[in-house]
Image 1 (cartoon, rainbow, N blue to C red):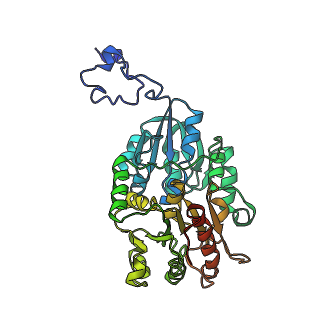
Image 2: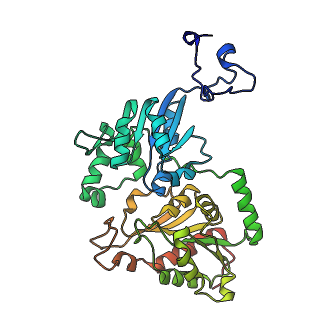
Image 3: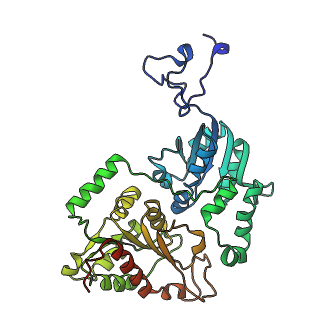
Length: 390
C-alpha cells in the first residue's frame, strides 16, 4: 500500500495510530464499526471558556445541535478548571482543555461549524484562527474589537453594549438568546450533566453513612460564590437566621453546600448552632472538587442559592430552587418551572454587574428572608404534607 492508495475512513474511532479494533485493519478490510454514531459527519467546534457556571449554562445547545445534525462530531474547548463539568457528557465527542497543545491541534482541523458564545478577546481571537466553513457567535475585527460573526448574534451583541437593553428591557433567558446567537432551534432544552456510575455509588454510600432519611425534606444552602463576583452571596448572619427558623420544623434537614472558597464561611455558619441543632444540619466537605460538590447537591430536595455555579449545578440536576439576585439579571436565568427568583424591588442600581458596591450592598440587605422561609415551607409541604410541627 502506498500513500496514494490510503483511504482514510471518516470514522470517529480511527486515529491513524493504532487499530480501532484489535487485529482489524480498517484500511485493508473496511470499517467494522460504521454507523450513524461513528461517522464524523459535520465537524463542530464549541468555544466556551469563561466562568464555570457559564460553561454548564451553555450545555443545552448540545441537544439542538444534535437535532439539527444527525451525523456530527462535536469538539468543545474550555478552561482546564471547567473540563470536569463536561465529563461523562454523551453529546460531546471530545473535550479539549485550553492549552497550547489543544489549540495547536484544533487549528489544524478543518471544521464545518464554529460556535463561540464568549465575548472575550482571547476566545474571539482563537475563533478567528479556526478554519470553519461557518462561524456563529463572536470574533475579532481587524482593530481587535469584538464583533458578531453572524446575523443571529446581533441581539446578544447589542445587549453587551447597551445597559438599558440588558438591565431593563430584555426579558429573555440567556439560553434562549444563545440559541438565537447560534441560529439553532430553541426548545427550552435542559442542561446536560450526568454522574458516572462511580459517582452514583459515592452518593449512595454518603447517604448510608449519614443515615439519609427519605421521609425528610432536605434543604440545601449554597452559601457562597466565586471570588470573581464576591457580592453574589448573603451574609453569614442571614444564613444563620433562616436556618435557625427552619430548625424548628421536624420534617426538615439542612445541607450546607459550597466550594473550597466557602470553607471558612460554612464553618462559621455551622458553629453558630448548638450540638443538638447540628444533628439536623449536614455539613458537606468543601474541598473534594467540582463533581463531588455536585454530588452533595444531589442530596437536596430544594436548594437556596445566589446566582452562582452552585445554582447552575442545582438547575442541571432538576432541583427545586430558590435563587436570589443582587448584582446580576434574574430574567436571564431559566429555572424550567422548578423554582422561584427573588430580586430587590425598587432598587435603581439593580442589576449592575459590579465587582464592588458604592451603595453598601443594599441589594443584599433587601433580600426577603421571610419570603425565602415561606417558599421553603411551601415546597416542603409538597413532599411531607402531614409531617410538619412548629
